Length: 68
Image 1 (cartoon, rainbow, N blue to C red):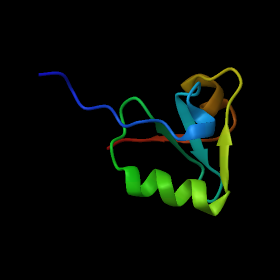
Image 2 (image 1 turned 60 degrees about the vertical axis):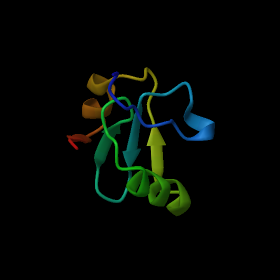
Image 3 (image 1 turned 90 degrees about the horizontal axis):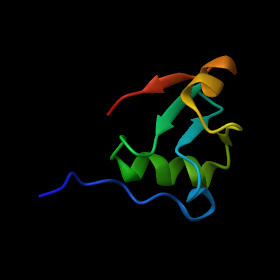
């Protein structure tokens, strides 16, 4: 059986990394599986997407990776 991957939020289907502006944490949507946290982040409207969509770019902007 394959590993379960969280479905990406509608506007962010093309993005892998999503940042929380309140905490400067970035979530890897291919690896993070707590949908409740991502849903709350989207509802808060305090999120950031990165261009280019890479962990290096998120770190360049001061975000740190949240594992989970």
